[in-house]
Length: 263
Image 1 (cartoon, one colour):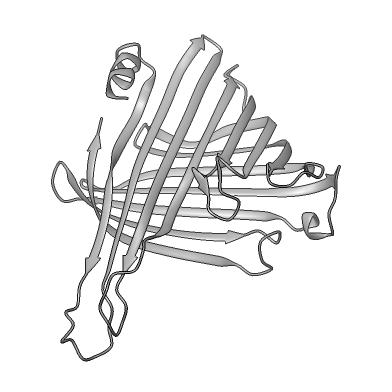
Image 2 (cartoon, one colour; image 1 turned 135 degrees about the horizontal axis):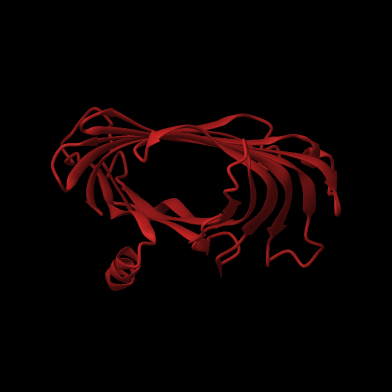
């Protein structure tokens, strides 16, 4: 992987690369009386961003994000460690082509895949997979430099959820997708990243119920504080609404000390 990244960096493709591991740990001895239980949680991750002008009017970007982690917990009474459970599992890749014609908006086309390394329920790798194709208009709302940017795009979109354990028809929804991303250097050693993605289906080709009519919303926020060159403190918060899963807003937060290698 490092050889590939180095080659792309030399060719002028890589504009962001980081990999590392997040670790959280607590432990209680058998003599501990308050009923607490220890836990060890780790998450390995890799983020790779590519950006290249294919011509004077065509810009290609690609963002790859991978994460996998497990959590080990102690039994509250015996203090014996239980088998690990999966705490993080994500494989996401999105490619975007933009026409930079000097217009107020830039026409774009994008393709995105979101899946996980292993489906524990169905015992399948890379399952299920959500595929999204969009085309429309994009705009750089704020971009004084590469470290401080706000971008947004709106387009017609098609989304398919492929579950290899389900032999029925693949649900395909067509509608509108809005994506907004922000990056800010809040301080010399503090970076903030945010990504908002909203998909509103207007038509379903293979409907199963009425849940497809509700918008899907995913709002992710990360604050990264650099302690040393290799050690960073990371705060992550996500709000998710997907009625196909549950008719409630889901929230998760993670505070972790990370060992990170970045370019």
